[in-house]
Image 1 (cartoon, rainbow, N blue to C red):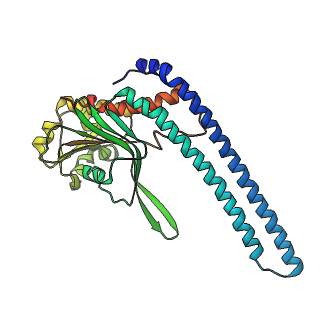
Image 2 (tube, rainbow, N blue to C red):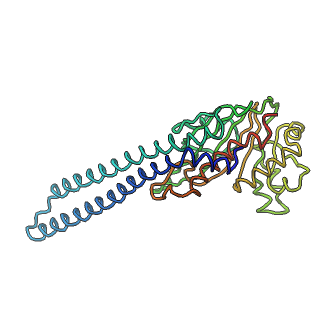
Image 3 (cartoon, rainbow, N blue to C red):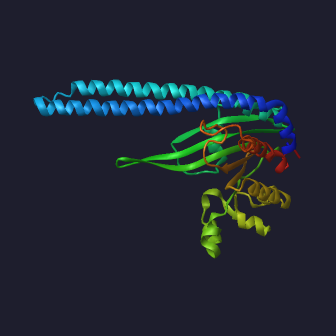
Length: 323
């Protein structure tokens, strides 16, 4: 794991100038955004004027042929679409430059053995194989795939957005399944069974009845009761092999998982299947994508990108996967 002090030195010698140049590019995109809004507002006002003039003509002549106003509407809508397309084209170029010139060097600084693919993600098959989220879904997307070898451990992780879109009458409902970072690492052992460590929601909601409701969740296997009281309050464990689950979740492993929970301060999930440990942390929004309305001339923003990447890559050491 890289320290903040090491990153500060690296930033001053390698990224400070890059960040300044990126912020200049960001300001140009922000100006294009404001211009696009103004132009489209002007087009709306122009259409209102034409429409009012057409209605006035209808009142005076009694002719209500809508052909002219439809043509004007189509032309103005096409212009609005063109302005929006030009903005998103410029924004996409800026996002690409941001990821290539800022995010990629950060990753290489943390560990040279990692590769970065901004437009790729953990595959849908790998997500399903983890069996952490067993709800139905019909929308799957992601980006910012990072993979490679940290010391001796093969890892990959990316941002994912998974949801089930349902049509009800005339409205569309989005039911989130998972939004956040999804991490896969080789555990260097082939598991006989399947073990899941999930946030203990039932205990928080139902207090004393929590164990009863937990034991009814057969989709993950049988409930495994652990000896660590703090761990039991934070997580619920299911497994198809009770002995193997206790072998995996040693006292030191449980302490490491609790440390990860405190570090991310968000719901986290684990599964141990085949020879992989799968880890998911729920996060809101696009984690490694810049917003054009927020200046990059702010170390807190830069540090937040570095912090997330450093924390994700440090999972290998935090879970002691190399040994």
